[in-house]
Amino acid sequence: MTNLSSLSKGLWAVGGTAAVVAVQGVLGAVSGEWVQAALGVGGLTACGLAACWIADARAKIYRAGAVMEAAEKGDLQPRVLHVPGDDALAVMLRNTNRLLDRVEAFGKEANAAMQYAAQGRYFRRIVMTGMVGDFAVYAGHVNQGLAAMERRSAEFVDSATNIGSSIREVAQMLSASASELEAASGSMSHVASETYEQSSGAASAAETVSGSVEGVAAATSQVSGAIAEVARGVARTAELAKDSVGKVVEADGTIRSLLAASEEIGAVVSLINSIASQTNLLALNATIEAARAGEAGKGFAVVATEVKNLANQTAGATEEITKQIAAVQAVTKATAEAIGLVGRMIHDIDEIAVGIAGAAEQQSAAIGEISRSIREASEGVRTVAGAVTQVAAGTQEASAAAGQVLSSAGDLAKRASDLNRDIDDFVNRVVAQR
Image (cartoon, rainbow, N blue to C red; front, side, top):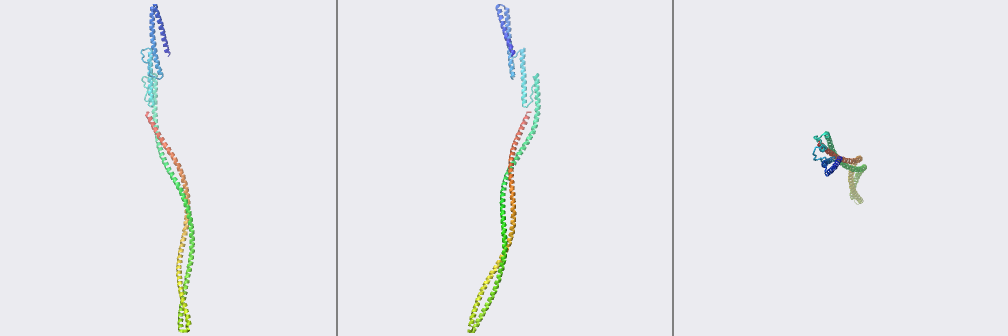
């Protein structure tokens, strides 16, 4: 801006000088001093030429200033156009254009190289053609940096590829392990659920069995008491049977005595019947003798008749007694036979009762042992029921834990799959940048 101000001042000075020269020329022409007038015209012409040159230089400098101002703001496209001549100003303006050309070329080359470098591609270099001086030095440094970045990028890609492969293998193993864990935890959860259901059912069944066993134990105790009572009753029956056997023996003896007495009575009756027959025969003989005696034997005949009648009555009574005795003997024999049969039956009953009593005692002992065993089984079933209940509770907790493991395994499998996919994407991107 100082140069432009100086040119403006020079232009004003030339204008002032031209005015003075013009006044002097006019005054010379008026006064007739033609030499002075000619000098005035020449001076005015020189001032005009100087003013034109200064104005042209001032315009070129203004254009150069606008181009440099645009470059200072980052716009490297404008140039100072139409710069003829070989004067110092023209050379300066052309050098300004060349400087802008080199700066723009360096910037574009560096920009292109950096764009590829930003993509991880380091093959692009700054073209050294036309680069001189510091531009060549800077371009060489940038190219060296790009080459170093390319080497390190290749080393990083190789390392990343190797690490990615290792991580991929680990991720795949982790994914496989997570899948196996998920499957195992699923199976464990299923088994735990089934075990819980079965344990719950078993606990309920054990409780039911425990109640049933307790009922059986109570019933067995009642049966044992009943069998003991039956044993006592059978023992009393055996004792009564033994007493009955004794009574039957006594009755049999009495019946036999009665039978013997009836036989003796029959003998006496037979004797009486014989006596009655003889008496009847004697009465008949007496009647015959009384008839022979006539009147003297009538009284004796009456007595004989009475004796005969008495003998006949005795014979009839004896016959009736004989029939009664025969009936009594028949009944007595039948009674004796019946009593003998009853005695044998009572003896059999006694033996059976003794056998039943022994069997009842054995059954009572066996039922007692069964009752004790059932009570012990009831205690065992109750213990088993408690254990199964604890197992069911533990299985429920295991089922919940298995569900958590299943959820965690599923999340782990998903994360492993995501990690594997991310690693594949990372390795592919790294490889794509080579």
